[in-house]
Each structure stands twice: as structure tokens, then as C-alpha cells.
Length: 151
Image (cartoon, rainbow, N blue to C red; front, side, top):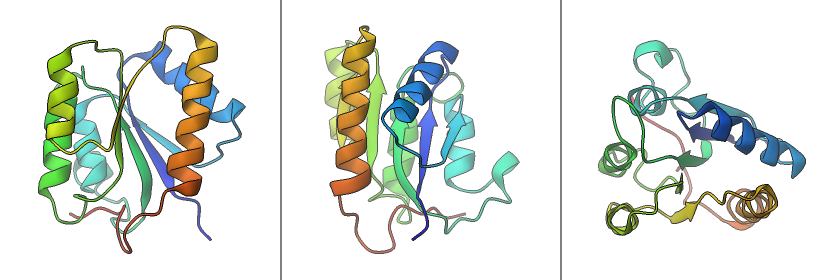
């Protein structure tokens, strides 16, 4: 069975490194694709621009989405994911340091599957990533044919 890819949408290099380290330390060996702004994430998801050659049928296990992104913010990325029939059921977990209550409300209103505030403490973050990996990559079942993308 082909391992599904994790899309990490994160503009902060320190948070990116921390997330990748936590995934590795928790033996989550799925391929991780990192995009560093909302526009690049959308290009990846919909196989366009610099990612036009990406196989649009290659399934994503999950998208880990920061909210405070350059070019296109995370909520707009989520809005576009949910508006496209090919990606509307794809699991999206908001992984952000935002403490804004309105971000939480808007994230769920737009169809986020989960909203996780990045803990500052590394051991808490490790546990959050371990739990996230166990649930979303092992236990969760997605609808048949979902998790891919469309042009």
C-alpha cells in the first residue's frame, strides 16, 4: 500500500523544523511536502503553477495548515479546499499558534476537521504530533477516492 503524503503549510522555519522533527521522532514516516505560503499550498493541492506536474491523483493523508500565512491566509486556503469537489472531504487540521477565538470559530465554520494550537513546550508538541499521527494517519478512515486533488 502506498504511503500517503502529509502536506505541511507553514511559513515559520522554526515551526516547520519542529513539526518535521516531531513527526520523525514519533516514527511517522509518511512523505511530508512543505509549502511556505497559502498560494504555494493551493498550487500544490490543485496541481498548478510550480506544481503543475504533480500527479493530481496522488492522495494526501492530511493537510496541516497554519493560519497566518503570506500571500493567501490559511482560512482562504481552507475555503478553497472545501469549495473544490476533489478536495472538499480531505482531512485538514489547522495547526497554528493563533489564540484568536475568531480564528477558531472561522476554522470550524469553513470545515476544518480539527484545530490545534501549537504548544510552546516541545514535549507537549511531541505528544500532540504523536496523537495526531495515530488518529489521522492510522485510525481515521477517509471516504473512497478522497484525499487527492484536481486541476
